Image 1 (tube, rainbow over the protein chains, first blue to last red):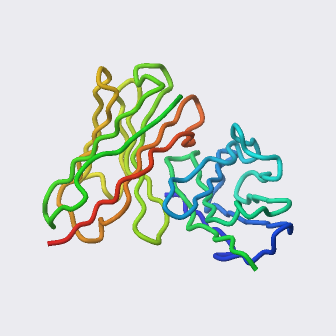
Image 2: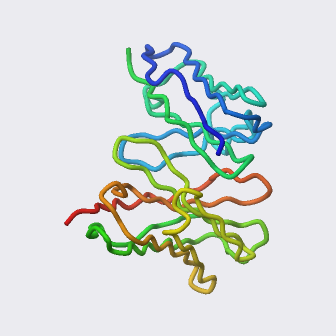
Image 3: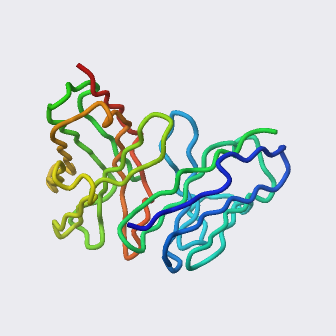
Length: 106
Length: 120
């Protein structure tokens, strides 16, 4: 099973600032990686697939990069609605999720 | 538009069998490339993929839970059913169904989830 490691576990950021989230996989997943946003009491929402392609309706302030085993989700200027938990997920070899990064208000 | 909705018991006793139903609309599970998965999330914890069924009735299961899970579909009713045997308190979680479509198996649409508590 491919193990996903997200860092940091919690990220404290002020509104308007940039947030950079990391996801590492235990073996190469090529570009078969997605990012999801989850708010309390809600289902996850797809943000990014193919490591860097924004899903339909996702604002341009969200961007993804990376390939192989190292991936990054960047939120260029945090809005109040962006404070949430973010998960990465690989779909290159079955399906596994990271442990999540909580983005909280500083 | 695409929607999915999970239904099933909110409370089950240890050792019982859980049966969950995912009822969906806006797509057909007979369309080539279409799949539905079950994913769960214990309170305050991360997401865990459980099982997937595709348009061709191929089924895939989490290695760690394979012996306890069965996934099936009723295309005419637009439903996917998951059964999980030998429920234990550690199986307490919100259970989601989610769709994948095409060659890339990310989850583009999710249901709102249903919380299942395992307790005597």
